[in-house]
Image 1 (cartoon, rainbow, N blue to C red):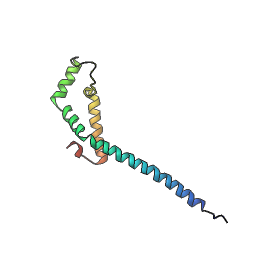
Image 2: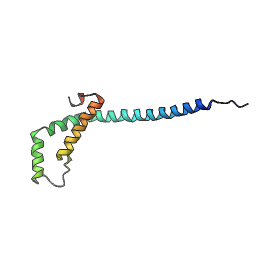
Image 3: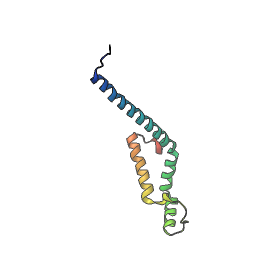
Image 4: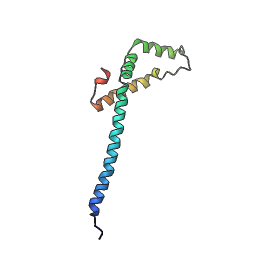
Length: 103
């Protein structure tokens, strides 16, 4: 004789198993992303110091005056680019409730 299973119970377990798998995958991906972010904390500090320095201002000005080779990658001299990136770092630190990355 075949045992009858409660279809509502089976459905509930299936739905929650799917939710469990999505959450587990998301948690794993987020942990990896946070580790990657932590790994660039010195780069964040370096970029912040560079952007706030007279060196960046000189490099920016020299680029505007065509004194920097045109074939040199210089996204860091994009005023909006570096400002927006560092602003995103601040926003992310707020989300993570961490301000120690820039210390």
